[in-house]
Length: 322
Image (cartoon, rainbow, N blue to C red; front, top):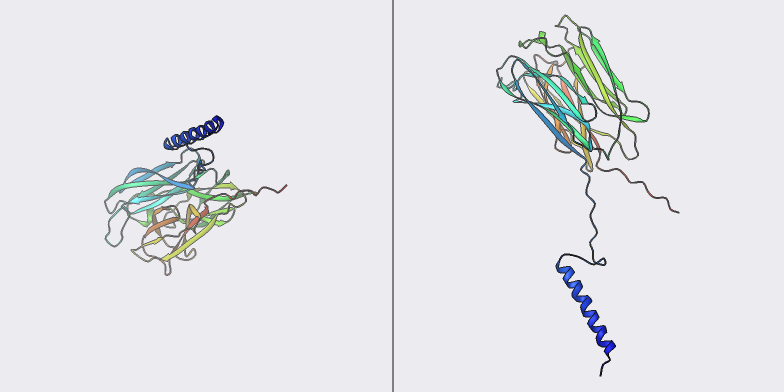
């Protein structure tokens, strides 16, 4: 005959098993079988947009902003419909302003010539990066008056202990909307990162306009940090009279695009004259540029498009062994 103690022990085990079964049925696991919680993945960067109406013989301006927990790392604009020299349709436009607003926004402005008659939209785009990946230190700016027929390289340098994240410009727009090179004021031949701590804007004041033009340039500087390096990818393409050209550089795996830049060549003798009407992020890892030529072009005219890329994550510091 079994003792009462043994019977009570068996009953206790059965009760414990029944309770565990009930908890599992309710979706509650015991500490021994509880699943580890996955940490939320940090989204490196997103693109925001702001749109405004745009038509021939007018100016299009828009400001795109970044939400809380992010900072602006680059930006651009798009014109729709863009000009097609082959069919002489769309908005024939030139850009006069593209720059950051504080640390949380991007503004851009373009002007459209009178012809061909068209209407559509102007969009500003801001590339907004997670604050956990980088920390803005300061912004540096400058301005200049460029005499007629002069080309100036305006170089903005970030202070020691920082590197340039992005840069921009704001210049004199069209003198009038009438279709004529005489009305094209300042031509931006270059706006790009030229060193780890430098952003360069190259601007030409049209020699067909008997006046000087004004331009302001600025760069956003970020603190240097271990494992945080801004890399560069680029593509180049040629263009001639009455044509379009484009560029689509992409970032390497495990990096995301933070901004873009471009440069036109040659920069001596006859200069290329083009209207950049597409300059924007291309997904999470690329940058897109589109332009149309204005008037005759020098032989060998090219455009180089740059994508600036940053690591998707910050390297964790290794704990020192005791």
